[in-house]
Amino acid sequence: MSGQNATLTLRTAVAGDLEAYFPLFREVQAIHVAERPDLFAPAELSDAFRRHFADAVEAAHKEIVIAWLGDQAVGAVHYEKSSLDPTGVYLIDRPMLWIESISVLPRMHGKGIGRALIALVREVAARHGIDDIGLEVWSFNEPARKAFEASGLKVHATTMWGEV
Image (cartoon, rainbow, N blue to C red; front, side):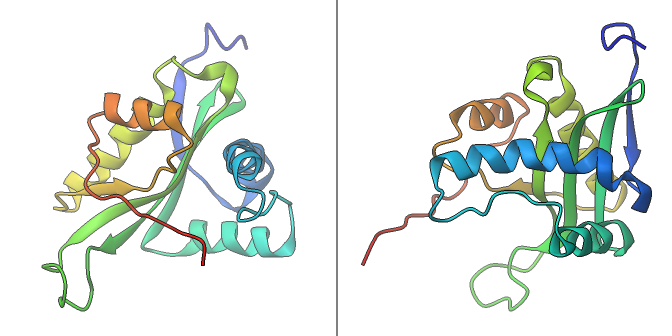
């Protein structure tokens, strides 16, 4: 089925989707490794990654959703139910859905797939009475930041690092 004629389908990942999900994870991880090889590990289909994937598809508070065009995985989002500050010391504790990872194949950028994945996370949050969704985007990933802002997300904090 041609990607241009296929309908976009969003489906919760199951254990058998590991091979479809991994290339999407590898795409976003490669961006990070290229910019910060001192910090980010190259994506490998290792036992650790298999455990990470299995945990995300089996845990009640986590989910991976894969975007499909026909039988091809073209995007994915991994999110989990979290909270702003479980200790309640710094912030008023309130639930949120935290996007751990979101990826769209480069050739599919600009086709609304990322926007559809973020819209899905918003829908899930609303269904569970959660008012906030969030994610972290690295300063070197300007295209992703712009896409997230176009989807209605706003910068609320900036993390700063320095060498010692």
